[in-house]
Length: 191
Ligand code: NI
Image (cartoon, rainbow, N blue to C red; front, side, top):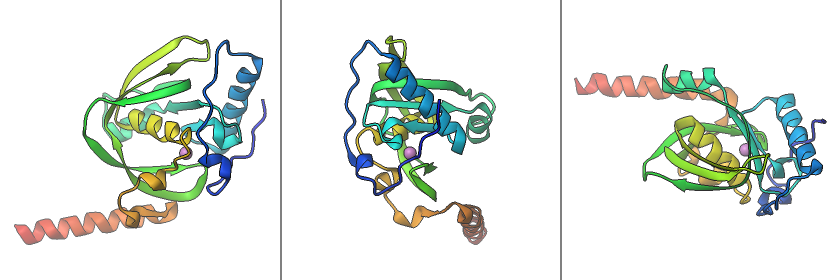
């Protein structure tokens, strides 16, 4: 298990459509997952797609930390343990989209507000070769949409509808404070 270098935006491999993986899943594929887990652990993050470590195969790993999802979605939200998803397909289950902050290990230092479907179903195979079909909402749905986009050569800035909301991570608190101050001023004006 070895952490690999994570490719950055501009690398041609991040623009490729990843190849589907035919079962049975061999030792080399298990090794790939171990390398991805080590790479993710080394830098810290919630998800990684195989192309990000230079392997153009249709495989993503992700997890939804309990504390993060509770912070964003309230007490009842539950986390998702470390998950391997192979050859994934996503079906939106509602038209509703929601803006949320995203970052990407291939776009280091930046954050953007990205619209995503709030409610999806994702299907694919687990590392054991068994079919997976899961309904996801909110942050869980966002993480899966972000990671699966990597398999089609898409990075989150391309999903953004307003590039004013692309910024350095260090500026996000100032940006949010300014947004809240403006909203409060507007409310005060209206009353
Ligand atoms: Ni990413």
